[in-house]
Image 1 (spheres, one colour):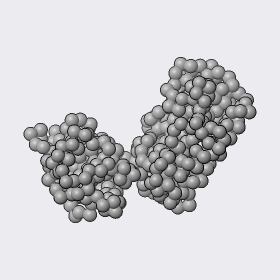
Image 2 (cartoon, one colour):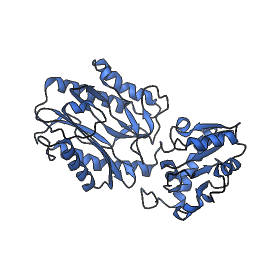
Image 3 (tube, one colour):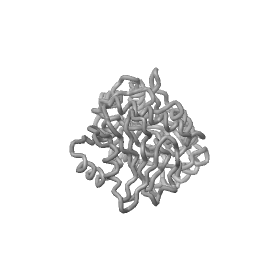
Image 4 (cartoon, one colour):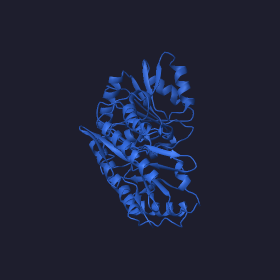
Length: 377
């Protein structure tokens, strides 16, 4: 199927401009070739969402070369492949060896970047055919093929972000009944609302109430929401191929003082990370900005995950905002900032926005209330 995020997605000029930008990054990295297998990276440079199977599909490109990249596909699947001047299509039959074809095309390459989705079976065979070549993970080397968003992509993320924002606002206004309903019933309600505001599909929907809110990746259950407890919502979907992701907590009653003070720490931590997300900063420093606030308040052991993840055509993609990541924040990065504080078996809270990095700092894609809102629905 062909991926689209704007009406011109299949236009060869767009694909060629994308490859030109990636080619420049590869040259700067010292890479002699790029190999992509199935997955979103392949879609990004070809619009082709290839079938995952034991038959190899691979996009092979040499940066700086005059020849267009070559897409190797099983000949039986060639009718499904979109045609574009941006790349050549080479079909192979079951009595041919596509790995040998790739090795022949990139012979002499010293450093080759390979997508994380490539099957080990094929990579090991390539290494055997090219023992003097260094094969490197694409994500480790470039920080992700799609990690730097174009202006059009940044607009797409803002657009889908407003859709999720609308549903979060409905929850905060008390328009989604909570007390007396199960988490599963509430999740179904939220999913319907996400579709109603314009998402074409829903990627996930976490509804975690009471003690379940202490589990960051809780799956909704038949637990009935009670008065005077936390309900944590974390949901997102796709619109024109790009993803939303937002987390908000509400309280079904009057917020107790201990919960209010802890939430104030969480909000301060999130703001610190947003402020730190500026071009030139290290991604690990953005994580540290949030983590230090929470640790200083005595909750360091209760923040049990990274501060954020990249987002785009996938909900989770490069770059990752985590401790020890020395990769640099650049204009065009888009990632979540979502610190959390969790008390196992009791309750937990998280606050998440998607931000886009601009010249002067981070722009939030959601504007709903950041306080812990009391709802009595």
